[in-house]
Image (cartoon, rainbow, N blue to C red; front, side):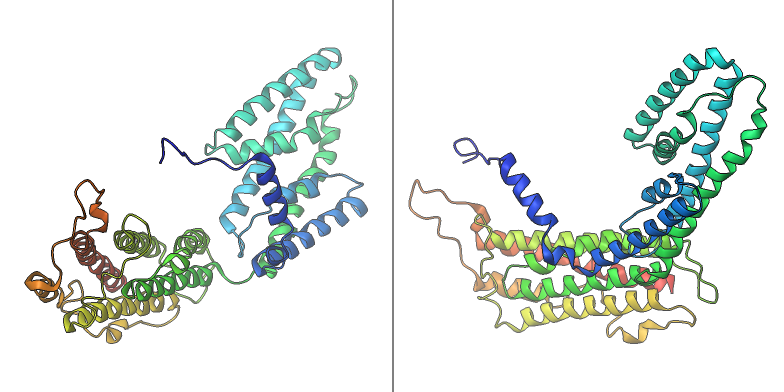
Length: 406
């Protein structure tokens, strides 16, 4: 099929039509996350605009700086704001020193020196920006903000260079106020604290995983619930970075390293259930009812309930510890079985039951017909049982990690 009928990319017209439709989709526009983003940054830019027009004499420094502070986070990203502040200061100092150096060469030579070094500096800055290195943010602001200083002519000979210090202070003040306006609006209109957003993300990932396992045991598609796990974990990792430097005041210190471990383990559990779902899907991708022949067996119900209970215990422990802020947390009382949390006790008995005649040898069809091992019930069941043993160990790892960090 790949040779005779390979997949075709959509046409450029279709891509443009879908993007335009998606941009003006009413559900997307009124989404709470998008509305929060719009309201926050609209108010921030309006504040900077009023300052630029009525206070700073139509200087665009405040408004331009505010644009670079826009981000899609639902909570204020403190580390990002600090990085931007450093980048703004570096950009201003770079532009000021280059301007004074060019003007130091003299009024006439500066007409050639200033454009030359400006062009070279912008080229170097753009290279750092597109290289995505650690200097990319500073390079972005150097390229974006230095035109306010460098696109100018040097003062005539005899004019004191120190006299321009007052003008430079206006630019510094505009940049600092832009950071103040944007950060204040982001903080006041934030949906919640970074730590709480991180906890909600992990809680959402757990809920989707548990829904996926419910559908898995019923031999149904898990596409809908499992699709939300990865975005939730990605968002949680972003919130965790902000929660690490969140002012905690009377609260316990945020467990950032523990959160990273939990996210990594949840990603592994997501892969486990995806592998089992793909094994059940066979060659056509539609889940086969391989559990129908064993769903009535007591050992099957024990395996299912054991895994579901362990996942529920891990969910309770992890979210409880992360949400704990000012008191000791004893979550072990919620765990029903500590001795064998990393084992499915009834799985060996279930395998023995199948080996004694629960599933027969496959029918390979007529001679010459194509037969795929992906549709072999023995192969499907063996894959599921193998991954189930790994999955229960990964789920138990969540509990062990939580206990160690309690």
